[in-house]
Length: 387
Image 1 (cartoon, helix red, strand yellow):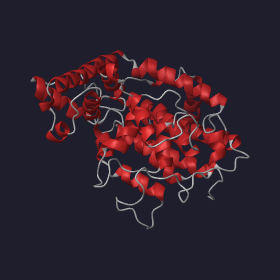
Image 2 (image 1 turned 180 degrees about the horizontal axis):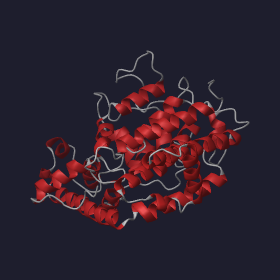
Image 3 (image 1 turned 135 degrees about the vertical axis):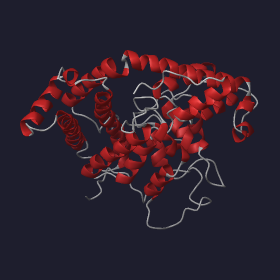
Image 4 (image 1 turned 90 degrees about the horizontal axis):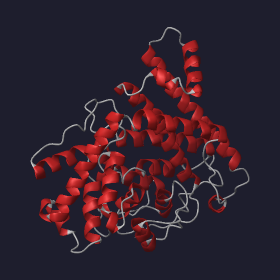
């Protein structure tokens, strides 16, 4: 499809913080946004997503989603939407792949524990930590810190959920070093990455919840729009096994959401002639129609009530928060418990010292965090794995 006038242009992308020289960038078959994507995929932080919580902590089963498989599914949905709208698929994909790089072990439970531990030092936020990860923590190049991604990628990552009017310390510090226009709306590619994230976890978390037995078909049919999907699937495949029908229903729901976003967004961007027009629109352009947005909010409410706040999930989350809190307390008291390379970069005073400790913990996988707390305290945490 022809690139739309309002799409990000890899030939006219914003600068890299440290320029194109010094880290081996050279002309070749890849665009600037393809280079961004590849740098993300080759990073250690991206690889560690394979063992970070999506819904369930360190699941024993091989078929549950992790942050890595979730990010891949978001990227697939994002590319489909971007292609239909004439956007830059590579920038969209890169943003989708990078959006969860700042998540600590144990998902939102780990984030809550780090935020509490860091309360006197500016708190912790996984979105800002994702940017900190790609700009300061990942250091594969000899000439500078970070992955040296394009301005377009960093801007989209910083505000894919919309303008940031009150940046926390991490985002403010990075924005001061490399201004990202935090107060404006980002590119359509970033907006598409955000809604692709919603579509992916809204539906794929249903699949995992069903697999684990935390959700049932009767639960789902309480939502009229899912009941409609189920009746349609049963009518089309009257003799198929129930597990296949459930998967078909989830696929249909994803398709409905994706098509709705494409149709609604196409109507919103009519008349726009540049990326500048997108940023100056002053509102979200890529997203659900009002009717689908209402359904999606109901689905989210349902998932929080039946899955995310399930008693077993809450109990596991409390134990996970305890693991992260104990790790932070141990490293804050005795930095010699940290690996040598992390000790070497540890500042002497807070808040910088506390923030580096949080960086180390945030990069851990679920399993590594459990191993670390077991080594320090002499007992392996129990009750974390519930599937």
